Length: 410
Image 1 (spheres, rainbow, N blue to C red):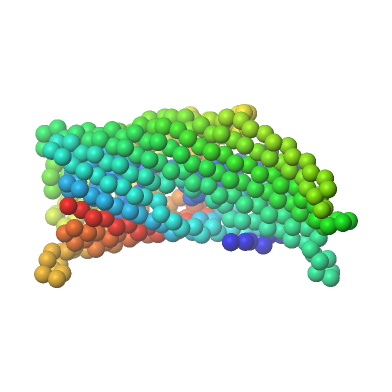
Image 2: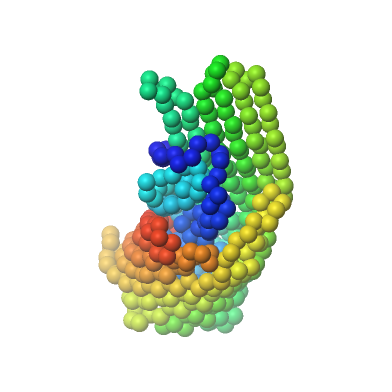
C-alpha cells in the first residue's frame, strides 16, 4: 500500500528537533500495535478480553501458560490467522523530520500467526506450536516531485517489514486432580528489513541513494505456569516469562548509483546487537458463576525499565518504565442440538487497559473485545474482534484486530 505524503524537507537532512523526539511506540523494533506482545492471544482469548492465563481449549496454551495443557482433551490440533488495521503517527522518516503526513496513516496486514498440537498421556501433557507474537511492518511512504510538464524530478520511498516467530515446546505435569505445573522452551527467530530509497533526475539520467538495513533476530526464552483448578467453579493461575537476550545480526549497505551506472559507491556495515527483553509475570482467575457463564481476569506485569537495545554496536536509549496491563472478560456458552448431536455457541465480551512502556509521552490503549464460536464434539471455530483507542500521546491512534482460529480435538 502506498501513501502519498507531503514533504516538509527534501533529501535526508534532519530537523534539529528530530533527536529530541520521544518516539517510543514507533521505534524501529517496536511491534505493530503494542509493545506488550506476551501472552499470545488465540481468537477465543482475544474475544474474551485477552484473558488467556486460566482458560484454553488447544495447544495455544503452550506459549502462554503451559500448565493448562493438563486440562485439555487427549489430543488437539489448532491453527489461527489475523487481519489487523493499525494507525501510525510517527515512524521512520514520517513526521520525524523528513516527510510529513496530514493525519494518521493506517497499515492493513493479515496472515497466519499460529499452528500447534498437544497430547495428554496420563498425568503428563505435551505441546508443540509456532506463533508470530511480533510484526514490525510500517506503512509504505512515498514522496514525488514533478516538473510542470509532468516529468519526475525526485522520488523518495520508505519501506519496512518484518516478523518474529516463536517455536514453543511445552511440558505439563498434573499433581492430584487440581494442581498442574508447566514449563515451556521458546526458540525465537525473526527478521526486520528496512529501506530508504532516494532517486532524482539529473544530467544523463537517474541518480539514486539506497540505505538498506537487515536485522536477523534469534534467542531462547523460558516460560512457566501454575494452575489450581476447582472443577466447574474456580481456576487460579500464575505465569512467568523469564528475561532473555534477543541477539541480532545487523547488516547495512549505504549505496550510491549514478546515471547509467558509471559511478558506484557502497558503504557496508555489520554488527551483533542485543535486545534485552524484560521479565513478564502475571496472575489470572476465572470463575464459573453458573454452568454456562464464566468471567475471567488477568493482570500482567512487564519490567520494561530493564529493557536494553543496541544499534550497530552502540547503545540505543529507551526511556521505559514498568507497567501493569489489566484484562477482563466474560463468556456465555449456549447449548443446542445440531444434526442430532450436542453443539455450543459461546458468546464473549471483554475490556483491556494496555499501557505502553515509554515514560514520555504517557500512552495507553483502552480496548473493547467481542467473540463468538461454534463448538461441536470434535471441532471448534472461533472469531475474536478487538477495537481500541490510544490516549495520552495526542495522536489518537485506533487499532482494530480480527482473529480467526479453528481446532480439532479428540
